[in-house]
Image (cartoon, rainbow, N blue to C red; front, top):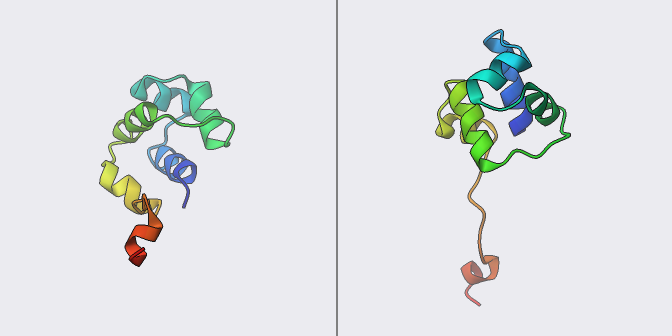
Length: 80
């Protein structure tokens, strides 16, 4: 599941409109709509606001989107 799909799913599960989520998260409703449709990128700050507005922990959010910590230097783990 993508971050956008997760946000939309949780928003709809609460019965919230774009406007309601925008008000609670302190972002514009058009931004929420554009994010869910893939028209806008979500900054870290706005993502935290949206996730918290939906009453979701960041842990739950990251688990739902199958986030894995990026490897900074893949060749370092190969013993180079």
